[in-house]
View 1 (spheres, protein in one colour):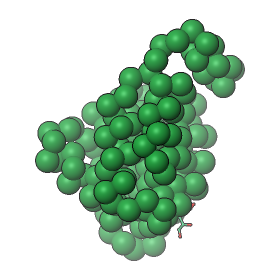
View 2 (cartoon, rainbow, N blue to C red; view 1 turned 90 degrees about the vertical axis):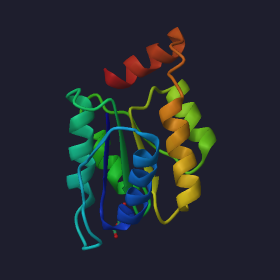
View 3 (cartoon, rainbow, N blue to C red; view 1 turned 135 degrees about the vertical axis):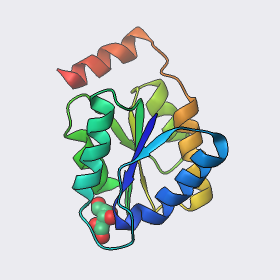
View 4 (cartoon, rainbow, N blue to C red; view 1 turned 120 degrees about the vertical axis):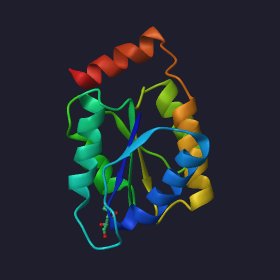
Length: 142
Ligand code: RB5
């Protein structure tokens, strides 16, 4: 189960990602927002992060205009490693090395096609499991 959420700036890209989920039979929970009306990104970043941190969802995706503010909010929740990605190599590396559990994107930065490619890469790349990477992740959590 994937948790997804955005503010108004990320709403349209969120809907595109949801269409991709529906086309590919990927289960998700949509934590809002639900329109283009102006709203506060921390509300949605934290809702997605909490769903991942408490085990309700396996991974999360958060989207705002830049991907920045909503990632900061998500990263305030204990156990969350949220990475802002604007390219597929970053999405791959943050799974392999950081075991990121939440992906953040900026809808004003990436277009819909690149956004979907980033989501695909993030969801389909497993953590390497290497001891040195786990050690570094543990140091982040300390
Ligand atoms: C909202 O205008 C904008 O500030 C927000 O979407 C996000 O980019 C913040 O970091």
